Length: 309
Ligand code: SF4
Image (cartoon, rainbow, N blue to C red):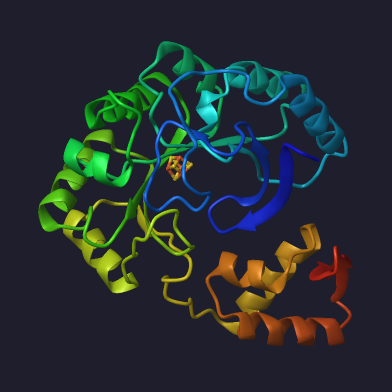
């Protein structure tokens, strides 16, 4: 499959089937921290960047087996709302496969537009980003297409909030020395309260970024969360998150519930549950002895597979 990938497991979305709606590297921004790489086509022009019919046929192929997934997630190598057939795709999935929930990861740059708001209206969960409270920081960190301002971005997220029924989980990614200063954090906090998302997710740089920037520590992110004090704030940055301490029985049950639905690599399980890889390994070993899971190989990689019943 070229446009559909996964499902992958994450703590935020559970099992999610990804759909790439823009190719490398079409985006309205060129963020310093981007994990995908530097933007080669910076644009606000919507177009059919990937062939609509092919995306539909790949999705159809996968969904007709009625897979056990939590979300179909629109993402891509750049900004997915740049895909001009997004609304058609949403409608088609809702008509043909209404049992599946939809999620969208977006940098919020086009949400101020009527056509985009209409396209995303039926999406169940939207995760818009807002990293800056001032244009100065926005330009430095997100390096948007010329003419795009923080006001525009906030206006778009507010439209999302007032004109759709979608659940909104706002995400802010903090970069050392750029958007972590007290004044910026306070202004960001004001915007978060104004937007009033269902959740506010704090993230930081954890994977190799497109340009040389550094992330914050878990303690620094906690400090920001404390300063803003918004209810329903979560630190989602995986590798800086404190490893959870969970009673073994509970952890055992969670691991089993994940792998009985779909085989998963140990790393992915540990990341998703926010626990140490070694802990997962030792529990998987026990589950294997009890005949509850087994190791299977896909593309040469080991996956833990649950045995039901
Ligand atoms: S908006 Fe997302 S895809 Fe685009 S440059 Fe920023 S991080 Fe990368």
